[in-house]
Image (cartoon, rainbow, N blue to C red; front, side, top):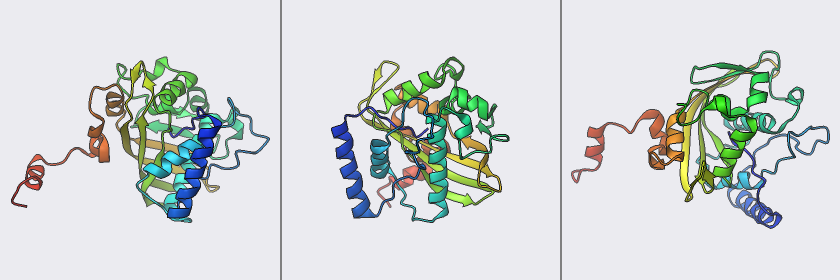
Length: 260
C-alpha cells in the first residue's frame, strides 16, 4: 500500500530531492530500491511514477534505520519493489518479483487471490477485502477508484517500513508499519494533517529464485478506515494499539500513579 504520488510541481520535487540528499548525508539513510524505473522496456499502467516525495516522507517518518545488507532492508526493498510493480506495471508478465504460476495473496485469513486477480483489482482491494462493507466495500471498487481515493487522502505519500524480521527465506515472517498524514480528502472528508498509522504482521513464501510465491498479511483494516472516516481518533492506532490492544488498565493506572 506504499504508493507514489506524482501530484507535486517540479519545484516541489526539486526541493524534496534536496531534503532527501541532506537526510542521506546527515543520517546515513538509504533510499528504497525499487529496481530500474528508467528501463525503456517497462510498460507503465499509466506513466512512470515519481517516488521523490514518498521517499522523503519515508525518511522523515520511519522508526527504523536498517543497515545496508541486513535481512530487514532486503525484505523491505523486496516488498517495495513488489508494490511498485503491482501498482504501476501494465503487463503482468513484466513483474520480476513473483512466481507467476504459483503466486497468491491473502489478508487476515480471508479470500485467496491469484496473480491475475491482484493485477485486475489492485493491492488495496485484496488487502481490504475483509473490511466491513459499511467502511470499505472492496467489491464495489476497482483498481483506479481505490488508488484515486487513497492517493487523494494521503497527498504526500503512504510510506511503509519493516520493523523486525523473525525468520529468513524461504518463509519470511516480519512485522511492519504503514503510516501517512491525512492531508487530502477521503470521500468528501478533509484531513487536517493528522497521522494515521497501521501495524501488522506478514508472511512471505519465496521460491529458490527468491521470487514471491505467496503473501499473507495480518492487520486490522476496520480501525484504519474508522480513523480515516473520523469515527475514532487516529491516536487509537498509534504504536500498534489497534493490533495488540491498549494494555492492562490496572498497569496503566500504576504507570500514571504518583507512587512511581
